[in-house]
Length: 183
Length: 183
DNA sequence: GGTACGGGAGAACGATCGTTCTCTGCGTCG
DNA sequence: CGACGCAGAGAACGATCGTTCTCCCGTACC
Image (cartoon, rainbow over all chains, first blue to last red):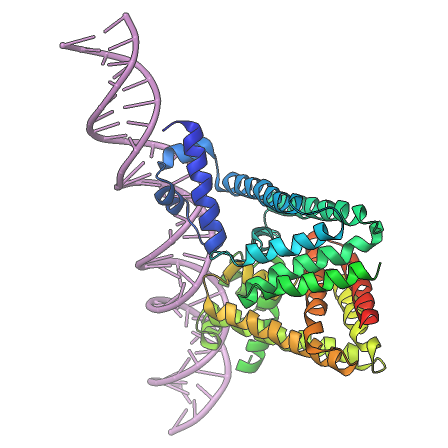
């Protein structure tokens, strides 16, 4: 197994475990067992748990935003694209292993204690805000109208996680539709 | 120091520490040092850390909802009361030690690993939803309109925590005002 | 064919945590 | 006055965690 494959298997295993059980609840030995990568190699690729965590957040950030963008791209331009964000949230919330937004979870767990985690979370949320701002701008919405669309999405993520139901995505979409109609 | 005072000092110290640094990052010895209660008494009052955590969440739930209700009660009936929720969020977000919603944070950290924590969080969020539903119903809004108001508030909590700015409360209020106008 | 090298498995180490135990001192009551 | 009991301080214990080290084996090269 070369370094690239070891890195991929480590990220796959660590990301799944961290997301499912929380970061501090998962030991490096469990990452080793789930990935099949020896502990020595693990520390060759990621010199500390912090760096492994940051790599997981980075990769998840890219994949999450790519998946969202891919879903939105398939829709006709205009208001449909803004609403498509909430449709995609619904699909995400119905995935069997959905357990909320990994970045919100990580921030609650480590945001106060690990500045690198806090930075990664801020960057992810900032990128999401910017993406949504572009969609809203493309339907003629003013910059100041973007906030509520972001908040509906963020609120839906935590409400869906805590309630265990994907329904908040529908409610967020309904709220967004009303806001779009009002502008 | 009698048992009642010990319990109060323990809850004060533990709640502040858990909120500021996260639950797993705070050891029982730090709670002892911050509260001035001996370790022996600590375990007499709360037989385990889990029970201390649950007691903190319970007390915080009651105090949080009472503070919100007290603020809303001072407003004239009608739409003003719904908007008052977001005004109170703004006040909360500007408190110097604000670090997001303790329940969302606790859920992200322990929701997957401690069912008692998950239950407490669900109960708190359910009560908030119900409170907001009453306010919306009192202005003639249908039951199905409540969701977006909850999501705006939840989203504002996490966005304010992560961005470190109270501005999301204003954005949530603005979104809520538009939604109220639309119904 | 011998030897040096690299990688895997897992023991080991030091720190920390939740929880319990010991020791010491002090107040109380007969 | 003496014995008992409770409370506080902190050591101790067992478990776990992040990280490193040791040992061993297969392999490639001279």
